[in-house]
Image 1 (cartoon, one colour):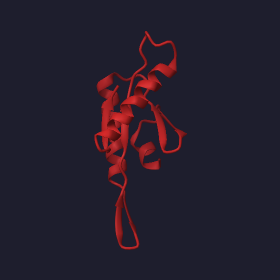
Image 2: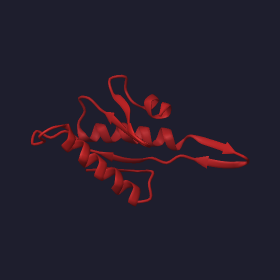
Image 3: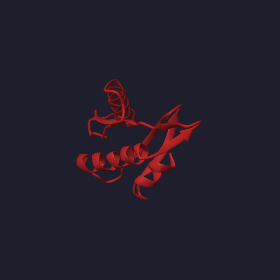
Image 4: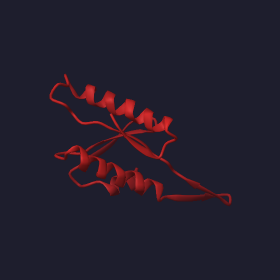
Length: 100
């Protein structure tokens, strides 16, 4: 989480949703800028390497990206699209970004 937090702007917000799922809110950006922010998070986490009992371990991130639409009845709509996109990233093998 610290690597992800270090990769985002101070105006952005990251928090744990539950389990191993986190939400990052990118304020005042278009979709392309949000993708760049999310890719920074992905790369920051992927750069982390751990060695446990002579075995090198790496972390992966499955990112689902969504934006709040005027047609959304509330934030849950955008969160649901992001969640579905995140599972699509997992199905692709992880360590990737999917826009929902």
